[in-house]
Image (cartoon, rainbow, N blue to C red; front, side, top):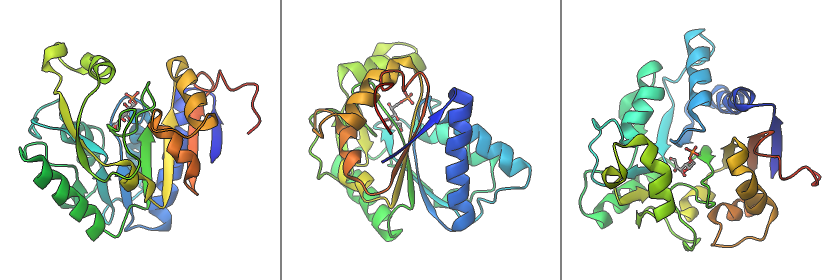
Length: 246
Ligand code: F6R
């Protein structure tokens, strides 16, 4: 695991965007695994800026997102499809027929998950998977206690995640209770993984996840066993790791 120190959120975003853009330049028809949430927004912004300058071409890129709320249509401003469209897809020359997210409107969980797994397999796997880190160590919507060998599955969100995501909704009862998410096995099968972490509120979990024991209680800890993980974290997120060598 490689940890790259960034000065602040802006620096973290630029460094992460650099790694994503290197992937696109090295393999123009790559498969990118993407994440939503607050942390990657700056990296997406940077990628759009480089695209606008003519330095990046998304025309052959395929994307698969980590997760989607169950029951939200694509047009819902809180859906992850909407987020991706708003922050990236609508701003670059990506072919939207090659941008995949789990189908939140598929009511049958088994069908939704089966279809999404089939898409990921048909693409031959993910070249670079971008991840954020949840306060309880979740990645995607894989909450503490999740079995490491799962592929795409339907989850019931923990109270903590509902509360953390509430800021995007009118009120707590508007936050969907379930979501479809890539499983840990799916995430771990990506060739490369890039984790972005920012802010003091992530400092404790960053240390536990990447320097503590590997345990299903902290789903992100499994990443320690992946052969090619890069964590880009700002100083605040690394503030509980100052005694460690890396
Ligand atoms: C997003 C996702 C989540 C977030 C995590 C951190 O697609 O699957 O695991 O990456 O909740 O979110 P932020 O970046 O908002 O702190």
